Image (tube, rainbow, N blue to C red; front, side, top):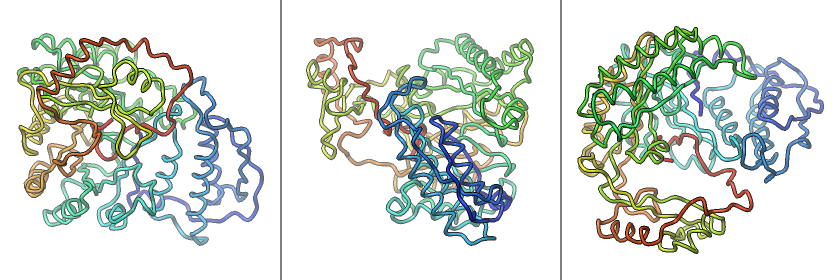
Length: 509
């Protein structure tokens, strides 16, 4: 994932279009760097940096399905890159010599590139695009049936950059009305104290240009005391600080290393907050421990102390591994089914179909796909989604921003943030907008989505009764299985399956 700016004052710095008059063969290297260099060569040829347009040769790129030895998974083949370069060239050819690219055109080019990215053959890229107030094209770029004309726009969340000390209430209300009317949570709202500082796609880290996130996490589900909380926070800070020492970034320009070392960021997060354990303890005390440990280790290994130390990330995947709620979010329900998608006929499907057929369901609208339903139970005293309002979650966001995130802020115009997806019921949109205005100093950005109270087939989380949960748990108990028994004879990795960080809401896998 990556965050980027298409604000007016940044886009204006791009060169004018100067279309190339000649072309020459360009052999694309079969590597991540090779693909990136191909895009760079194309852009340079239209920016007057190199007046010879590359005539791309894809013959060195491995065919689709071949194994990726280093990263694992399978090669996507040359087709995604070919489509990417063709789309970019089409956008560039629509311009006249002397024209400049618009914010939307730059945004679209970034989305086209992201659509071609298949990290390790498995994950797609996801992004956040930050644009200027007054840019109505960007603000409305996902209104209407945008997925038909520009499906690549699904790779990014679009958020308007708002200076906290300059925005007026009527201006905010106009933006919020667009968000409500879109029924998709966009444009998002990103409050900042400096338009030169951006963020990562899930918005938990405040970043100067050309720098990286560096995240570790505390499992709140196992916290037993204040001392235990402090110890876990210290360990997370220790590992994060060690990671901050790794700044020899292969391939990237030197400014990435320079800027990353200026802040030496770490991001100690907490997941499983809605389990309830951590709510009893002193967040400020634990945050102070993370700062002390960062200072200690940074001095030992010879790096700068972190500019920002604490955060709350979405933790959609981490929470599954450690068995907690996701980051700041409530548990989906007291009893629910967690559906894991798989392909009909792959080894995972065949294993469960043979040994545990009761857990397998063919997807109604995609008969070549299935879900494995795993029963889940929230712990005692946990916060449940149906038991709280949008404002309840927002107040929890505020509490952790003030007492955990801001207490770990050392320097920089923006503090880090609590990443959260707020689900709004129809009657809650107005009060959520009012809360965001009144609390604009207590968060940077939030994802706000319509609350889906309907019933959909095979959704990732499905509420179930205690009886259904207990019946499935009994079935699993009577039919114990070991995942080590699943033998993958052929690499069945889906090269286009998983979003790194979904723009529709970062909590979702």
